[in-house]
Length: 128
Image (cartoon, rainbow, N blue to C red; front, side, top):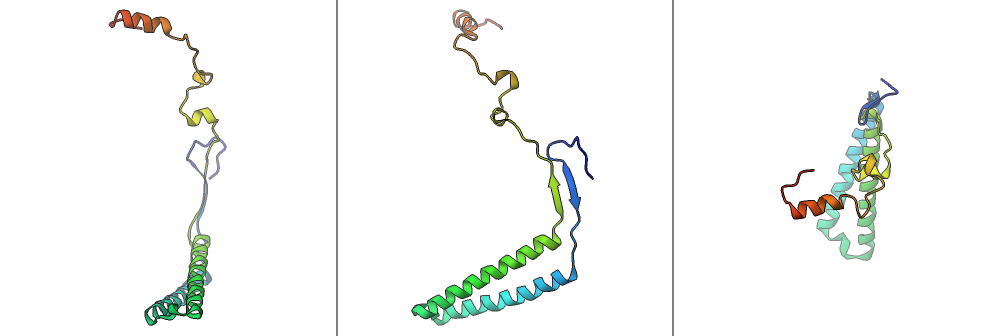
């Protein structure tokens, strides 16, 4: 689905996800581990483990494991279950980002339109 004359925002490449059963099983197992560690962390907070220095470090370690496990779940999901889509983006020059027309790139001089401004000040109904 590739075309050389693609317009801005057009999909250049689309590959459907693999959706492997092994990845789905791994996500399920990692989710079970995640629930166990979240339960352990919650139980530790309710039981007051964080009041001692050792318990506080233990709860911090459990929280770190929770976030790393969540990162692995999200990584597997993105890799195996989301499509690989490449969207064409054309590089623009800096003045185009400022919505400046090409003929106005150099700006205007101090006297551009000065005569029109004087005529408009003297005669308000003057048309260009």
